[in-house]
Length: 178
Image (cartoon, rainbow, N blue to C red):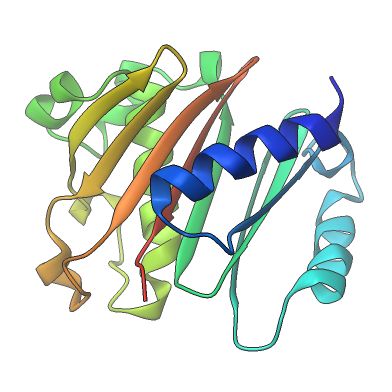
């Protein structure tokens, strides 16, 4: 899989759905957790790419690492889809929340991405305090979602998330627009 093509496709779709025209997404296989140097590679890339006063978020899993950059608070999570089970997600979600989500990996990644974006506000001590809802199917590979309880974290109510299934991975991006 060509990482440049993957990143261009993700970026265009995510910009549109998150209504964030300046959003940058960089995804590369060598940033995956299988590579012992992945953290150093990601840090070096962020130092090269991050504009002053912008926000960044990173995530990595087997075979893929992702960096997102935005003028607004942003979060990203990537997971190997088959590794996230209902049982895992049930530890941090209500049955109703899990039943409303398109899948366990989608809910897990959405919560993780939201958690990372909340570091600009009152980030909770545990991910189970984050409620995700308002899922909307865009196509067979894409869903949108919202943080259902932003007032809990002293954040603006305006928030947007997008969940994408790409190959063997589930990716979520979450933003608090400025």
